[in-house]
Amino acid sequence: MHKAIEALRHELATVRTGRASPGLVEHLKVEYYGTPTSLNQLATISAPDAKLIVIQPYDRAALGAVEKAILKSNLGLTPANDGAVIRLNIPPLTEDRRRELAKHVRQRVEDARVAVRNVRRDIHEHMRKMEHEHELSQDDLKRSETELQKLTDEQIKDVDRVGEEKEQELLAV
Figure 1 (spheres, one colour):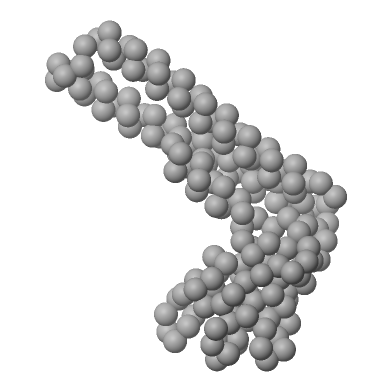
Figure 2 (cartoon, rainbow, N blue to C red):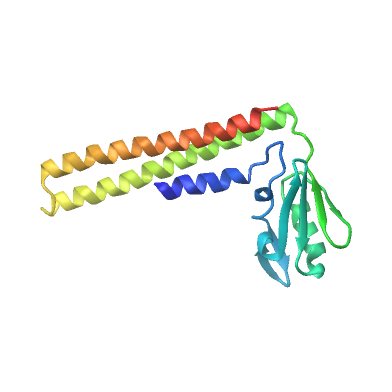
């Protein structure tokens, strides 16, 4: 269940807000000598201010491939290449784009809730199997089910909290 929340946090870090963040581009796959490679393995990514991301490849030969990967992504950003580094200016988000991104965040939060519930289901099935094989008494089963439900409720609250924080960050102008 904790892994589902961590995956959600990682995924929401890639959702673009009004501020520049290296998390926006570090997951991009760049075709580097015929092999898809993560951008964060090919370059130093920094955000010197709130509206700019600077990407400095370790190998200058990779500049074109990095630029191509950014253009192919659906980030809507245009790279500026000066021969040594790539600069990405982050334009302010329109209200429609903010709402669209908030909808995307809500979908990811729902996916994380489903993942937490799937873990609960798997554990519940395992406990039932143990009870059926007489490795667990009925009283212990009931107690364990109650504890499992409490834990699941706490995890879903955490998922909701993470989603609300990201939504508020998106909708703040």
